[in-house]
Length: 153
Image (cartoon, rainbow, N blue to C red):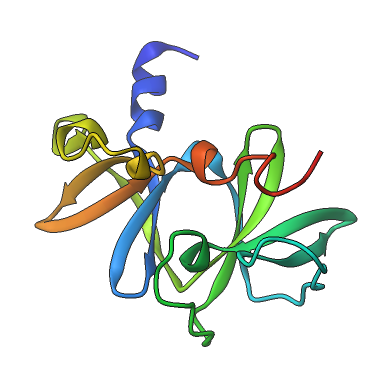
C-alpha cells in the first residue's frame, strides 16, 4: 500500500451518535454495521458487557458504549444498532444510538487529547475533530475495548 493511500485511510472515520454527541472511530477498526440483533446475556460480566451474539457462526461480545463511557444509558429505538469493531485481535459488537456516515477528517482539523487534557481518564479519546463547524470526539477503540477488561482470554 503506498503512503498516499495510507494517509487517506488514517483520516477516514465512521461517525455515530451517543446521545446528542457525535463520535467517530477509525474506519480500519470497523467491520460492519448491523440493525439491533438478538444477543444472549452472560452472567457475571461487567455492566457494560450486555452479552454475546452469534454472527455467522462466530461468537462475539456485545458492549453498550454509552455505559462503558459513563454516559446516559442507550435508549433503544429503530436507529440503535450494533457496530462490529476490531479491537486488538478480536471483533466486538458495540451498541450505539445511531450511525451518521463515513467521513474524511483532515489531519489539521484534529487536536490530540494531549492538547486539551493531561488526565488519564481521557485515554479513550484519541482527539477532537471539527467537521463543518461540528465537534467530533474521536475514540481510541483499542483503549476502550481491551481483552482484559472484557474478561476474554
